[in-house]
Length: 142
Image (tube, rainbow, N blue to C red; front, side, top):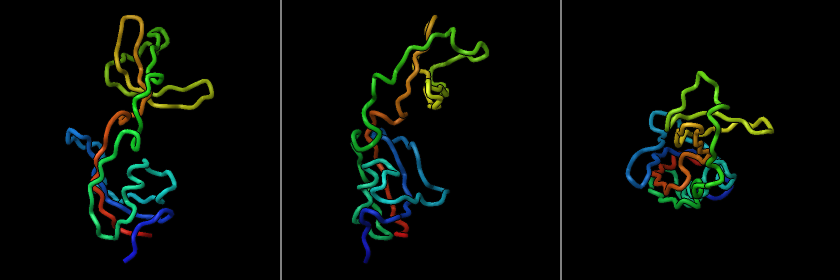
């Protein structure tokens, strides 16, 4: 029976959770995720986790921070003056916003803290610094 190797296009169902057991993503109720193994379309640990699987195989993969979204980067946490926030926007901790850099690229940020004069914004990926666990089922090698 054929096993997954680098370069194959595969279709998988998955359930992703944190080490505390909370679910952050799942393909349940959706089409399987399709990606080319080794092409950088998914995080490294997920990519390598499907290698050697056969159609119908199910496995659980524990992915360390450096094979997932990496550690939190303190350089992506910034103080932003409240005076530069539109007056109709009332920032609250946990609120997700969009910012743009000098080149016009838009990126998401999350409000980490709200002070009197400034707001602390975090541009890290929401799963940065987290070890991830995926239950993976190989549906098809395309």
